[in-house]
Image (tube, rainbow, N blue to C red; front, side, top):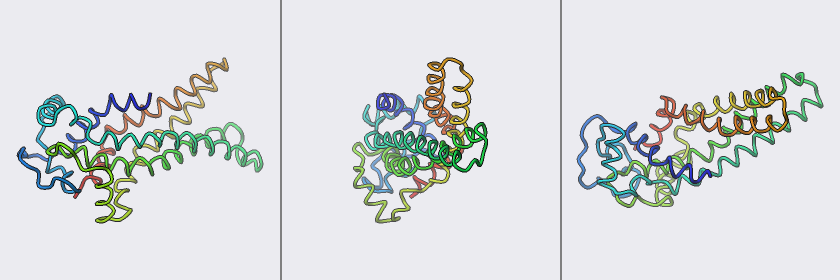
Length: 239
């Protein structure tokens, strides 16, 4: 399910990234300045688009259908961040409850809010340690509009490591956390609260899963359309 959703939405993510990163002037469609490496993935190597539909048309015309999926294989590695998020979230919730039961720091009502918020934020933070490096390499490939076959993940990773060190994989990490962590905290808290408000146990479990999982992703997707997401992308794709 996660793979199919990613597959269906990936072309829109690619177009969004290119539109955000393109510069004001018309860029020639000739041979790129570099056919591999970090420089080939800069905004200056992109064809000029006037809008979403224009971008789809030009990508299909100049790069073919595969052009809409540049970086897709790399981005699929990020699916494991979902499992990391869920595991971290549940472990922190249970551990926080155990510690509070032992030391009675908060009353049960307050503790429920605190542990859900802390668990959601911390799980999001850890998930970004996987998502950001994957996004950096994937977005490098996304931006190579003049290259039919982008360099491989291994090739780009080696270049980033050689030129910038390990920290090169975490450019924009703080901005990404600020995009994702607050919505995750809010949805984790509100999801649990809503599930408690639903009388039947079966309904409570359904509401909890719906809000805590699907709506968290929706909140992240909504937030990702804003300026904070652009600030997280800009450092990743600079030369």
